[in-house]
Length: 236
Image (cartoon, rainbow, N blue to C red):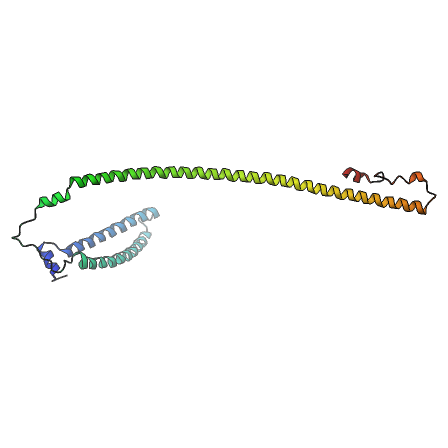
């Protein structure tokens, strides 16, 4: 930038861009120093090492951190400085300062352009509308959260009802299965008793044929369930 047209323009306006950049650098250095000093005080207080040999170790560690932070900041500031020279403090090609004999610009026009009562009123109206919209949005969000909580509660109740219904259905199903099982066992036992009765009847017939001198009064003992076991009769 030195010796360029931009430098001449800024010099004529008594503006030094490099001085501004250097002040920013100094301000950043001061902030880094203050941050490291504050960190050292807080760490020393928290670790309770004030006045001990560990204080030097803490200082060395903080210096290492400071150098690392300062190195990264310097690289970024160098890029920022170059960007300022290329864009912020670079006047357009062909730029010319107004001559001293030209009439100054009417400042009242600028003030009227900046301070427009109608524009200010419109801005105030927009601000008020934005405030109202924000309040309505907050109220809607609260109402939405309340509805979500109610919906979650209703979902829990519905789920509980479904579980209760399934439980009842399963209970009836289990009772029905138990009844079917009992009926099946009863049919089996009745079948066994009938089979035993048939076998005894056939046995009596054969005994009558092959043993004709047997007492007839004893032939009817096997009829029915008179000779069935007590447990079978109780289960029946």
